[in-house]
Length: 366
Image (cartoon, rainbow, N blue to C red; front, top):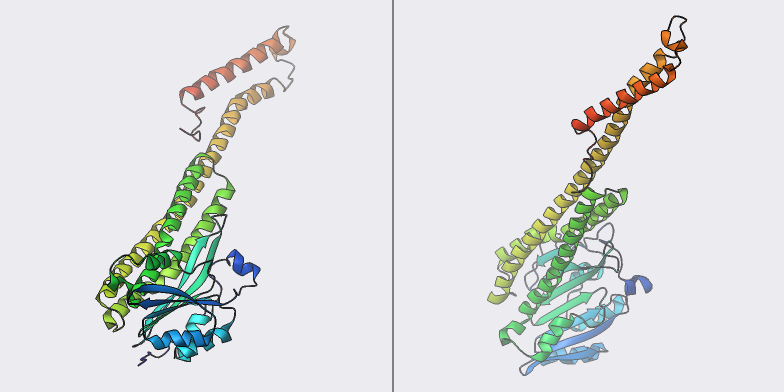
């Protein structure tokens, strides 16, 4: 029996997609062609089967074994709804799963559990983030996954593990499969954060050694990607805790422990995103400090030149007044005397500034 809270099944569409479209979705106009497959959990072990028609799915459902139906591509919504009608999935559950892009969510509805996440990845250029929505629906004896952009096999690592028929039998329960799927989507974020952290370290060092405006642009892109990842993790912090307090009947003891670990995983992801966002701020501060030091070095150089040439300008100004009673004007060696005097003053002042450390370049890398 479904027990949705008010507004729990509303479609929570985002104003814009969290990141760019994957290449195969972009080429197909944003809607991948729909195809189906199923994993039937027989007593002998899981068996992967292709699905071509609602009749075939109806026969599998009548057997009564746990069934994992995998929907890859959301281009043909009518066909998806026809398939799910065979499984007696209420139509009220479909909008959050079939409409994209949705806000991340985990909703317990009595005899149904809905999870919506985004599979995030980097394009060939790691500055560009890609996203594809993944929806999961758990009902008694039934698990349905909706992948907006499945590249090849649906969840290949988990599928290979199921087909190998290794591990404990209870780990092949549908609630545990749901936990493994969500865990796989979240675990994929850690290598991305590690890659971003390595690039931020390089940017911070470059900002100290050779600050250039393009460094700030790259730091801003990484900060934007971190904000996207953080926004996908943020709603899960509270919703997973609420799910655990509800003591959802669809989740067995192993799955509940898995979701408790998942809550800790979400907290760790959130904290890592916050730390990396602070590192982006540190890069901006390092850039500003480096540029300030360089500007100070330029001003110091100009000050040195001004302080050296000011006495020389004063001497040249005195002897340029051309008064009749200036004895040096009629002296044979007066011009040489003035040049030597200015050279001596410049050398003495340069030596004095050098002794005080003014000629030291404070911006040079050490």
